[in-house]
Length: 112
Image (cartoon, rainbow, N blue to C red; front, side):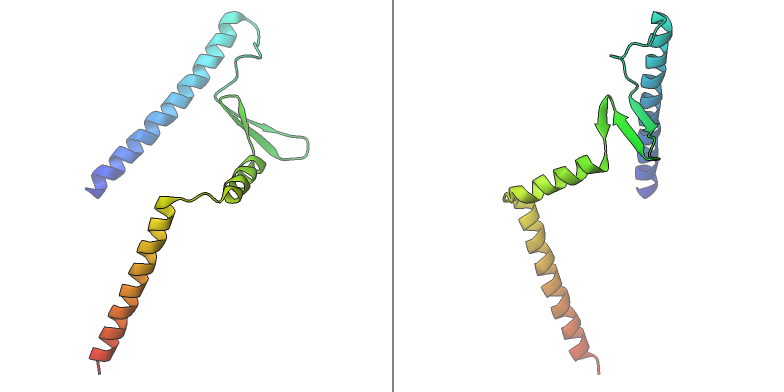
């Protein structure tokens, strides 16, 4: 079952990579067909080095930076909304810890 899951995962990754390469080829083909570089058509994945030596990445025309991710994480932490699944996970973790501690103490008392 593990081998099958691994094969499916690798196949999905290869197909996704093929889709991205296809998008890139389609963008290049559109540029060649038009004969000029249209600023409205952007490559699906674009990584550009800045003058400071940093890299800027864009995903389908939307820029991606670590600052965006940090601000989104801070915004989520500031919202302080109740997350049922997070609370459920914490309860399951605490119950599992208590049961494991109890089992280990029981085994320690049984063994001389």
